[in-house]
Image (cartoon, rainbow, N blue to C red; front, side, top):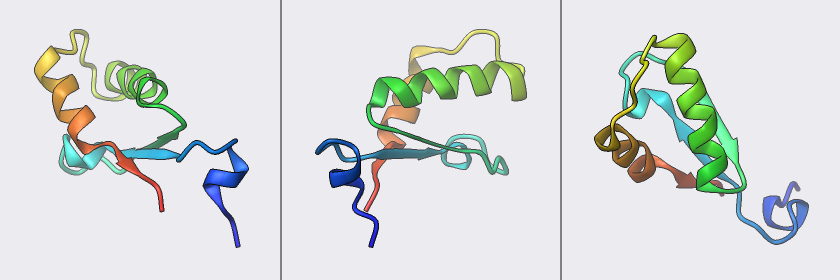
Length: 70
């Protein structure tokens, strides 16, 4: 059985689903840290959603929806 904590040096992996903020988007992200996921989400928002300015409010929504993987 895959153990993400053992696999990644004791760090619990995190995930984010874009659909939690942008209904209909099926893109998901995984990373070891919130910052890693945020960088991926910002790139995705710029490229796929054509958002050129990501507000602090949007970043707060994203942060609130980042979950620990089980």
